[in-house]
Image (cartoon, rainbow, N blue to C red; front, side, top):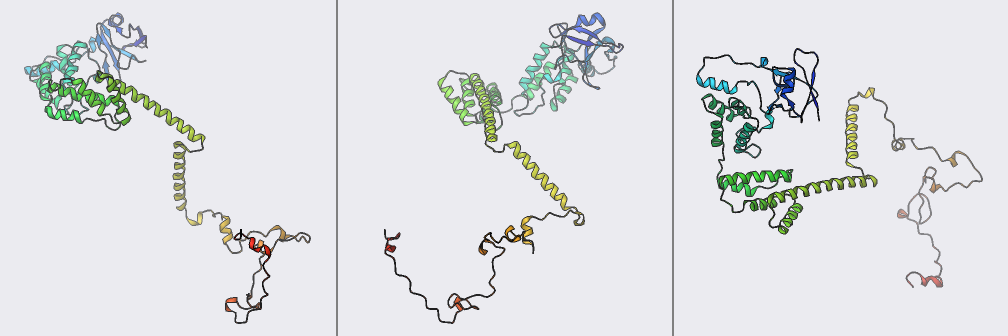
Length: 419
């Protein structure tokens, strides 16, 4: 946390340091060195500047805290005042409302909701916007002549045009907020709001917290439209919340929790479901990490290695496509594989070592065991008559007399079939 802040005017070469009190800069400390100072200017970039708000005589820090930058004091000489104009009363009132004040006390714009006039779940309801504006008026002590510009800065689209027209016609900011409430208030009927509330379910990718907030917002709109519709609104929201949970296991657990505690409120059930969801998410992450570690120990490829292999395959395909673009005359000779070498004529491997050197006392293997020296019969021989030149199926000679088979031995009947 910062304890000092550096301030340097446009005419000074060296910055001065001021001590912070509870994270704020007292205005009297700044006036001790700069008597005409009325605030501080925080330069965001080359074109944008932010005048820091002042509350109870102390300068508040920017939204991100006191940064390690130099701030510029805001003096009365730097405040531009509008010269008198001879304009209509409505134009003079609008100019007074949007004129730059001598002391800015408003918070940064992004701290307040922005109202665009759209009717969807993501837009801010007009009642919430009006409540936030009234709260900001009281919290930051915004003067009446500055509230018009403060309101216009938080509006977009059609509402901004309408409010600007109202302010130029002489209406006050209170009347402009009332007009917004009347024009952009709840337009749906009670039945349509009830149907939306009862049909609301947790969407895919939506957390329990987001689902509970959106469901509660829908029921608030319904209760504002028809306050006496339900006798026990909290019980209705609680039951609808439990029934709308997407995950079946968590939904059953919430139902059991409500059955054990019938008097529990909607907020307590929502907090319990949020903690249960976070615990299950953490457990799932731990299980996934353990599964990945087990897969790596078992030799399985995790997702990172699979993605890397997929990238390598894509690179090989790209290299192959680039190689095909090279002209054939400029390509390098392709190496011949052993299978292609055997398929070529005369491409048989070298002869075995026992055929390269004669060893008279070493028994040579049979011809049938050596496919490279197996004899090739040029003339067939008949197995019927024993004459060369034909096969047995084409033999016309009488068959040789075969010897009588030997008599069966006494042990012949003790074969496998005679047991």
